[in-house]
Amino acid sequence: MPQTGQLRRNVLRFPPVNENNRKSFLPLFVTNFFGVANDNFLKTLASFVLLGWVADERTRAVLMGITAAALVLPYILVSPLADRLTVLFPKCSIVRLAKVAELPIIALAVAGLYCHSISLTVGAIVLMGLQSALFSPAKYALVRDIGGEERISTGMGGMEGVSFLAVLGGTVAAAFVADLTDPRFGYAILVGCALCGVSASLGLRADEQKSHALHAISPLRFLRRARRMSKRQEGLPEVISTLCVFWAVAAMLQQGIIVYGTQVLSLDSTHTGALLVLAAVGIVTGQVTAGFVDRRHALIGWVPYFGILAASMLLALYAIPFPPVAFGCVLGVVALILGFFKLPLDAEIQRMVKGPRLNTILAYFNQISFLYMFAASILYAGISWLLGPQAFLLFIATALALAAIRFALGNRPALFLLGRIMLDPRYAVQADELPAGRTLLVLPNHPALVDPMLVISSYRTTRLRPLVDAAFFGSPIFARVLHTLDAVKVPDLRARHTAADIKHVRSLDGMVREALATGENILLYPSGHIYTENKEDIGNRQLAYTICRDLPPNVTVVGLRTRGLWGSMWSRKGRTASPSFALTLIKGILQWPFSPLRTRRAIHIHAEDLTDRVRAWSKFSRREFNDHLTAWYNEVGS
Image 1 (spheres, rainbow, N blue to C red):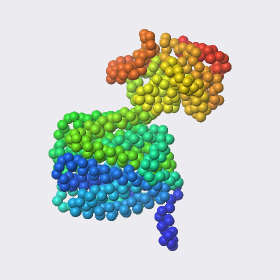
Image 2 (cartoon, helix red, strand yellow):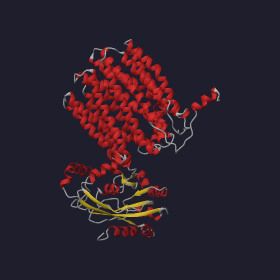
Image 3 (cartoon, rainbow, N blue to C red):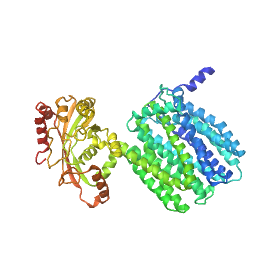
Image 4 (cartoon, rainbow, N blue to C red):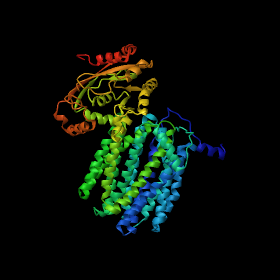
């Protein structure tokens, strides 16, 4: 029989990883349910009770903000420590110990509610947030430890669905209990949820991946280091920041509905709670449904459109004085859309971050998401104080719309989906396939300003790094898009002729060859400008020539020949100068709704392997090289 010390070591040891032993999500889901339910029951019950303790309406709004901030502030301060705990101890043990620690916190909350003490009640909420923050990274990292890579979407969909079901249950129960005269029902629910959470945590089983990375527990130092870590994973900062906006919107929506229902719609606590129920049901339904859909068809590209749609409906709630029933119906639809908005972002974090780094990224996400929620709580108090109880709807609609647009420009799948939505109604593109499994130097002709967008959109499954004129980096919007495409800036020596620009241009061929040697695919326009007539003219340009003259042996050179764009509004036909990109883009956006009424322009992109010919041409002079390539672009009948 093992000794006591040995038993203690066994409890805290890391179990061996067994890839073939599939564990059950059920204990994790149940533990999560009772933890989230107790958090929301305590916060919502305290909100309704505190409103009864304070008479002044403005003070009520401020107290709502303070109550919400009390629950989220610990996440900001102790998320680094929560990450450290996942390194030192098994995640299952962290969850179990946290659930045990919930019991004395609930005792303090009961004492505060019984004594009508604002300080004790808010203090208990702070401690509840502290306890939740300390085991949050562990419980979410367990999703992959329990289910493996292939069940990430199922696990995250289940966790988020259970979370919002718990929000629903906690909110409904709190709204109902707040209208009762006997407070003992509330005390019993708080204690019962805590005991059920402890019991469920004992059933946790997982094949955990141990991490050896010890990060700083100082909030600021951890924030800086984890932020640098997240930036190493392309697209991860955009996913995290967009998800943080969701949580800020959800936090402000929950606070706002409590005050809006009682003051604007003149509802009692039970019916105001029903509005919160509709919101929770909508988000649960949206997330669970999105989890099943995302397993078959990735929804990450659709996130901006869900955000824009939800923002539009929130704006309608602000502008139109809906009666309670209609308000609740619209709110439920908004919540459903927000579920579709959130789930793909959650799943994307799990897909993008591999191994033990996930613990750190989840702790970092907790820290900044609750920082957003804390800011939302403070902003809600200020907005309600200055502009009234309905102004929060306008604020969160604006924030959600801006986040959706920013994500659309900063995430590759979302950006490519936006390109297809904008371009497909206007252009019928037939594109030849590019060689698979090779490092490519792609050399297209340039008939119009729009053909780079058509080329990149048509070959979105092949990661192409375009070389782009520096002039396009002048706009913050274009610069963000080009950064998402990992574009290489090419100085325009016709506009600026500084020594630094000349040096940069001279080093471009080496930069491109180095990128090709490491396996990156490069998209380079040899002419550097669009057609002045209905034919290509490379002239005396040298970049393509100097690169091909010393081409790495692993590279395949592909020529692209685009036909069908001469005469479009993006071309120079009938013009003495190139059309303005920004003005033409605006014109195209304005014409886009009428695209179904017009015949789509037929575009053909011919792809051909030119490797052997280019290597032979590069032995000649630069002018001869350009003439051969120009002749290939201008071949008749192709």
